[in-house]
Image (cartoon, rainbow, N blue to C red; front, side, top):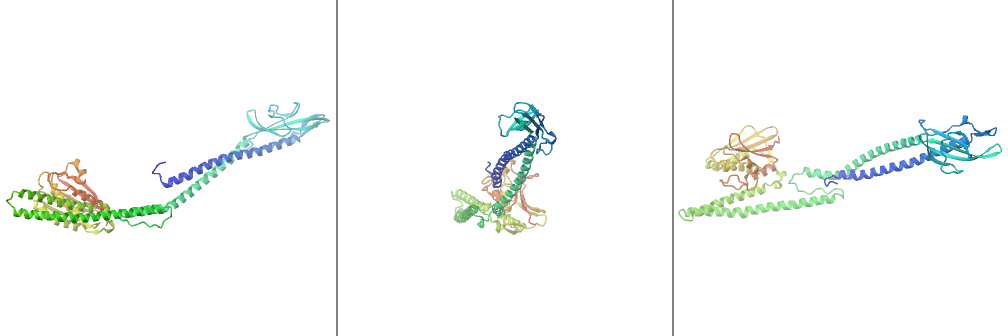
Length: 460
C-alpha cells in the first residue's frame, strides 16, 4: 500500500474489500441453496408425475395397459424447454410402455429412487418407483421411471441468480454512495483544519481552535505545540538579531572613528598605511554586519504579512534614490529615475522595500564596471499594467557571464572580485521579493549592461 495513499482511499478500500468478499460468499451460498431447493421442488413434481402415471395402469384381458389419454406430466419449465421421458415395465422385464433405453436406477428399492442419467444426448433427472399390482389374480411388481431434462432447473436457477446479482449490485452501489458520504462527513473536521492552515499567513502562528472531535484533537494539539515552538524560535532569532546589532555595530563604529582620528594625527607615520587598511577592513565589516542583519530580518518566515500595508512604491523609489545619490555622484556615476505612468499602491513593508531598491542601486554601482570603476548611468524604472507592477534597475556596464547569473542570489557569492561587497545584496533582494509575492528576474541587456526586474502583483 502506498504511503501517500489518502485516508479516504484507505477507508474505501477496507470497506469495499470485505463487502465484495461477503457479496461473493453470499452469491455462492445463495447459488448452492437455490440449486438445492429448486432440485427438491422439481424432484417432488417428478415423483408426483410418477405416482399419477402409476394410477393410469389397468388390466384388459389379462394384459397390463396404460391409459395415456389422461396422462400428463407437469414441469416448471416456463418456456417449454423441458423434455420428458418415461418407462413402464414389469419387474421381470416385460415392457408396458415408454422408452426402453432409459437406464435402471443404481439400486433397487421399494422407496422412490432419484438419480441422474444421460439419454438421447440429454442430461436427465429421473425417479424410479416400484409398486405391486394385480394382473387378474396374479400379483406382479411394476417399475415406473419418469425422467426430465434439467434445462428448466438450470433456467430457473440462473434467473434467480441474475435477479439476486442485480439486487446486490444496486445494494453495493448504494452502500458505496453511503460510505462515500459518511467518509466525507467524517473527514470534514480534518478538511476544515487543512483549509484553515492553507488560508493562514505563513507568519500566523496562533493556536488552532481545539473545538474538534476527540479523534483529531491530538493532531491539533501537536500542531499547536509545534506552532508555539516555532514562535519561540522566531522570537529568539529576532532577539539575537537585536543583540548582534547592538554588540557588533557599536564597537565597529568606534574602531572606524578611532582609525579616522589616528589617520589625521599621524599623516607621515610609518603606521599610516596600516591604519588605512584597518579603516578599510572596519568599513567592510560594518557593511557586512549591516547586510547580515538585513538578510536575517528579511527572511520570509520572519516577515509578518499581517502587518503589511498599502505603500507608495514611487515614494519609496524616490527616497532610495535620494539616499544613494550622494555616493553615486561621488563615484562619478549618474542616477536616473524614470516614471512613465501613474503607479498604483502595492501591499508591502516600506522599510524592506526601500532596502530592496537601495541594494539594487548599490549593487549596480559596485559591480557594473567589472574590473574597472563604473562611470555610466544607473536607471530606476517603474511600469504598471492591469495585473502587475514592474520595478527595473539597470546599468550600462559590462554585464554578467550567463553561466553565473543563476548564482547571483546565493549568499556570499561575488562574481566581481575586483570590487568590495559582502555577496549578500541580491540574496537580500530575493528574500524581500519572495516575502512580497514578487518575482525576481536577472538578465543581461541586449544593448549592453545588466538589469534586475522585480514584478509585484497589482492590488488595483
